Amino acid sequence: MKIAGAIDVLDHGHVSLVESWGSDERIIEAARMSTQKGFEGWGPIDEPCPRCGKTRSQKRDEAVREGRARDKPCDGLSAKDNEPCALRTRAGDEKLLAYLWKNHHATPFEMAGATFEIQAPIFIFREWHRHRTQSYNEMSSRYVPLPDVCFLPDAGHSVARSEAASKRNKQAGLVDGAEVLTMDAARDLIAEEADLLVMVEDLYQRKLKAGFPKELARTHLTVSRYSRMRASANLRNWLAFLTLRTAPNAQWEIQEYARVVQSFLADRFPRTLALFAESQP
Ligand SMILES: Cc1cc2nc3c(=O)[nH]c(=O)nc-3n(C[C@H](O)[C@H](O)[C@H](O)COP(=O)(O)OP(=O)(O)OC[C@H]3O[C@@H](n4cnc5c(N)ncnc54)[C@H](O)[C@@H]3O)c2cc1C
Image (cartoon, rainbow, N blue to C red; front, side, top):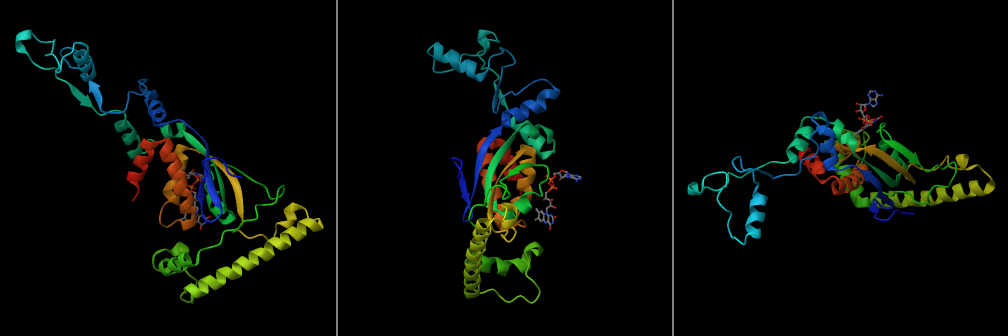
């Protein structure tokens, strides 16, 4: 069961945006509570001519109304001066947004947020739930059987990661004395894992039928089994999550989920997410 607009992740997972609140503009409004000025607009913003007080767009409207191809000279001067207006534009609130982001003035980013529904393997949820300040609700295998789908690694990807892992990334290193993983070995072991998962599911169903309560029937299930949850947080929190989970040292599978979360957020908060993307190494 997927929410409309869900994006597929891994072999059986998906992420969908349940709702989001706030916007780049709301973040500016929150920051401007200190000066009570509110959101002024994204740039470039027209500044009025210091002599006549008209802006570029007012001058343009005036020319259209009067059927002229060009602006009139500035009417803040005498006619003989025949000078144009001293029109200027200035940066808009994107400058303030960038300032907030770069200087870690983070609380305005708490005024926006999003809730996602996620189907992911339990081993991903183990990592995700370490982000203790997000809010979660997960389906309960005490009350409903978990979906009969498990994550299976890809053989080629496993070999590539095995080659890269021990050299670059301690987190994903190999055990001492590990052999060089070949495609044949990877394929064979993954096929064995797939067979094992069939046996695991068969035992699960037999336990359920035999009358085991669901909370006990599940005890032998693997962490590759998919589960489903909702995760909710403010934007500051999601950006901290993305910083950690899109980084190359995070497990590749959770990076895949984080990238989808990032794409949904970029759709809703394009200016903030652009600043986030620029600031990543
Ligand atoms: C690559 C990688 C490898 C990891 N490996 C492991 C691992 O091997 N084992 C493991 O257990 N975890 C591991 N983690 C999880 C990691 O330790 C963090 O729990 C996780 O990244 C969430 O970060 P967080 O604590 O900042 O987030 P949150 O829990 O959402 O907290 C957000 C912020 O709130 C504050 N905060 C929250 N709780 C407390 C508290 N109790 N006391 C003080 N301040 C608090 C902190 O400022 C924190 O940064 C790993 C994470 C990554 C990205």
